[in-house]
Image (cartoon, rainbow, N blue to C red; front, side, top):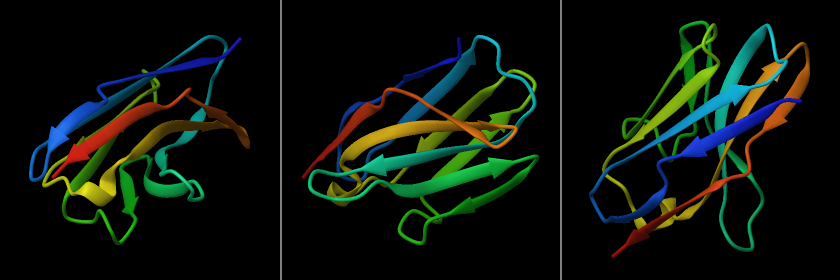
Length: 114
């Protein structure tokens, strides 16, 4: 059974930083893409950043402020979030894709207070 465990969410001030981490456990192999999504209240889940073998892509709203990094072998993916804004407030979800099957974490709350 595959489980993704996220950590690092919490409360930050505007302009502050947080780092999210995600680690997969269980019988998951051949992870070829890892990413972070977020969902704010009343909104759809949206892509924040994704990472695949050294290549990273970002949503325009976070580019230059967030950095994604990952280790395919260790099945870990991090999201460093700097210069946080109130609009970054959301539940953040980790995604790891293996052989076209998507595995999701349970989500971690990030709240940015103004």
